[in-house]
Image (tube, rainbow, N blue to C red):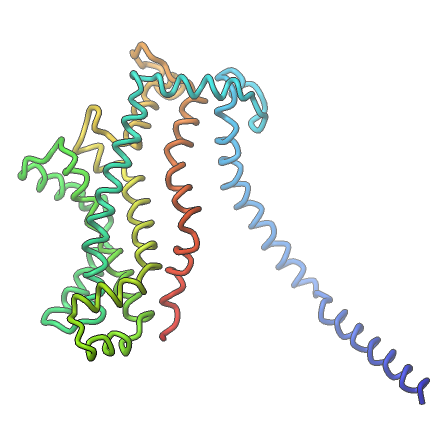
Length: 314
């Protein structure tokens, strides 16, 4: 009896192994399909990752090394320090001023965006009032209009208000973020229980108290999501600040264009007495994107929960 049981177990195990091999055996068409997918992924990886690797290594080299050495060769930490000193010595330290301007514009506009977008999305999602549907449709339409198409009317409006050249000329347009209103609307419509809010109203809480003490604590993920998208859009905006502010009030994205104008490789006719080399420009580019990277790393948990919170109806 024991031998029969053992033989049956061995036979069953062999059969299962054969079935697994059959499942894992790929047809020629499947092999070709997987090979094409891998090839496409490798091409995209080379297209997107290799320039980033080059950018990370470029500040460690001299201009001569950057042109003559291998594109992915490492220079030295001493040269990195030299390029760092050259960058922050440019224009008597104006790069630091540009970074400070970007931080001020982005965070000031972010504060206004959150104060406006979160209550607006809550009201559109959970409060019935006259014109609610029309307001939502207008929000969606404006959200679909490219930002560059709005630059000219915004410039004319700021000019009429005599705000050109002032920080408000950057902060106020940056604060206009209909996409944040739409994200908040979707979140409150799908991820927040109406029964919970109604229970608070039955207990005697007013609408403002329901929003502040019940809805807001539940809205941490979407607040982080709206804040991140708003900050990234504000920090990376070039066209509008280029038109409405100048001098030492420009943000770092406009400042990078000024640095580019002093690089002989891109502007051979430059008449400036201060010349910026390519490795220094690469270092400036890395520093300009560092704040976004740091905020993303610290806020990643909230961003992921915010992007998935509205996926199912509670």
